Length: 547
Image (cartoon, rainbow, N blue to C red; front, side, top):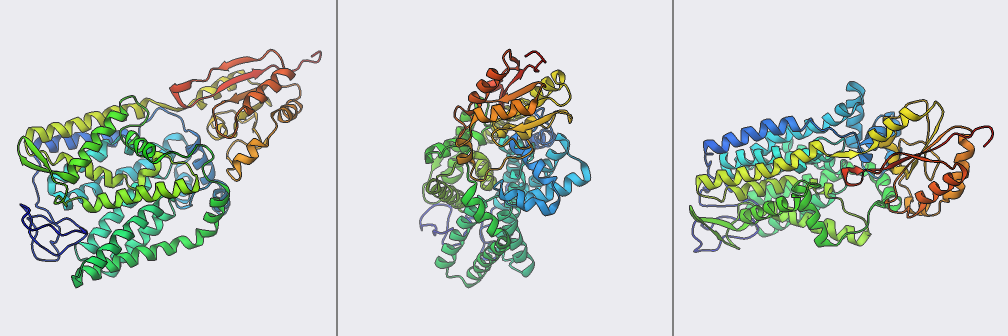
């Protein structure tokens, strides 16, 4: 790490500093610097981990919910011709790599909910053996089995394994990058192949999600500090090469830079307000613990305790764990990168006035998982160790069940109601436009579907200058245009009143339609907390010749 072990601390001896932890099992060779004893895993730990793997693998491909807004947007953008995807993303606010891969995936396998989500499931599945390898390197077979078990059942990992978004891909790339950094800086394998691989992974991360900037920045700070402080020639050479490889990987982002600058100036996060730093920390812990179910805050708190044990805990005997604020070095590298990533991201988001979503934490989630697993290994008593592991898996199972059962969108219910009641050519209005991608996915093809405020197609949302456009819109004028467009046909309004930048716009549209077409009927009630993305469906009657 960046600090030498102080003389006189039991279990440590002076050795050359490195970004990796050093303990009493290290030798003087470069290859073993920072390695830990291959601690055997008790049979009950292996059994628990295997059980977690079986359940976790199945749950990576199981959810009852239809696609919600972000997933439907991903599909609708990715199914465009490849040449149109970059321009569509300029209006969406994301980098292109995941969308290009999803485009290829759908071209082969189709666009059903299960198919488009399975790509994320495969990314999440591929992450499991990498977690085992990292655990084996960092703490022997004991940490390997616990780390893979924790990741297999982690509610956060399961959520994004079953979502058509890029976050499982981010987690996978971070794990690959971790192993390459480990090879280059600690294991002395700094040949050209691994350096090129590290550069490619860096570029892939930057072209997958923009919060990777903060992870890469934090990593470079830690590597630069290590290079400056460590005077061992071999280590300085390897750390320097890793630093340069990561920086070179950033050059792969340059072709996308003009689009990124345009997105930064015109898109942003109008769908949510800026959070305070402590709120961001609490949100991340809750989502790591499962997100929407009631006990997620408690699960997140348990995870936090284990992280602190990993960083500061030393087993004195079978019943006691001492807290050592200086000398526990096993996971200091991971902690520094994780904390620095979060601090940089919070600082820049606050300065830019942009919102934070807990899914952005996917860039440092693998490091968090390793720390949780490391906290479990601090229990010296075999029964307590297995009990702590079982507790984490049991709590994670609660979040996993919520992920499988919770409905992310009411769109399928709304579409069924409209499909049953509508005649060909009836007008369907989505207010706001953010309901369009998910709620229109299951609608019949013979309906006229538009969104408020643009009167455009429902398949995508144009986030460019979004807030100013919405606030300038006129629901009364839109309502008049909609009535004229519908002619004598029915009008269905799919609407929700809680979206930012719309204030009372959707209520205003409802009132305008009700004035022109009295006698409306509610087909679907707003499902509230039963859905992440709820809405009301109201039908305004067809105009008869005498009306």
